[in-house]
Image (cartoon, rainbow, N blue to C red; front, side):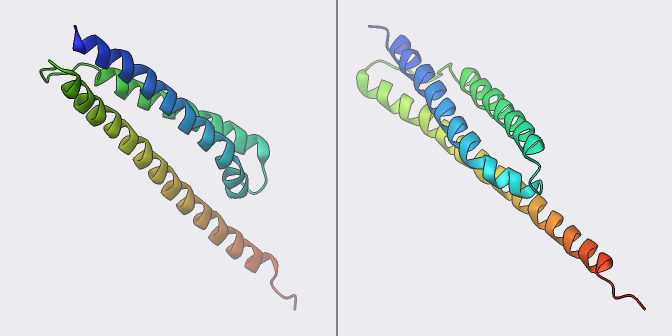
Length: 129
């Protein structure tokens, strides 16, 4: 039996399905966060959300296809499972890392926007003489 085909046949669908599931979850639940960052501008938040998901798909599916090739010798079911666990585990770590990186960037953007609004309100609320 060709174990490489088994690994490829499991790896690609699992990786693509995992990427799609995470992307949909982030898209749905991230919208509220983006609307808050963009001060209620839902059109801008939705647009940025779609761009983020597009980039998310491109990076993850691109990486999955780049790492499809296996340099390890796969001669048994055990080696197939071990190879799959390394490949899929790496994809999961990358998905998690990208998620936390995006959260960090938007956290910083949100804080910057709040600081700007606080400063702007301070200037606008100056008492008149």
